[in-house]
Image 1 (spheres, rainbow, N blue to C red):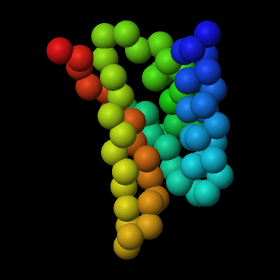
Image 2: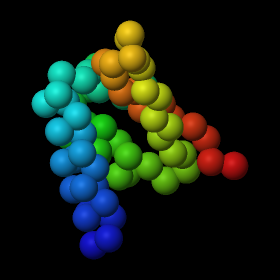
Image 3: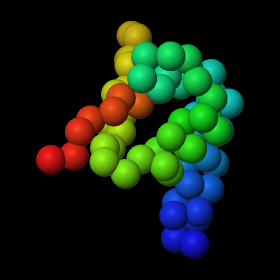
Length: 70
C-alpha cells in the first residue's frame, strides 16, 4: 500500500513537471510520467538518480538514470 501511494505521489509530481513544458527522460529515452513512475516503482536491485538539465537558468529536462545499489 505504501509503495502505491509513493508511486501515485511521484506520478502527480511528474505530471505537474511535464505540464510546465519540462521533458522527461528515462534511461536516455523521452518518456511519460506514467512510464517513469512505473519504472521507479518496480525497481528492486537498482535506484533511479534524477539529473536536472537547465538552459539559461531554466529547467528544461528531467532525466532518470538507473544506478546500481551496492
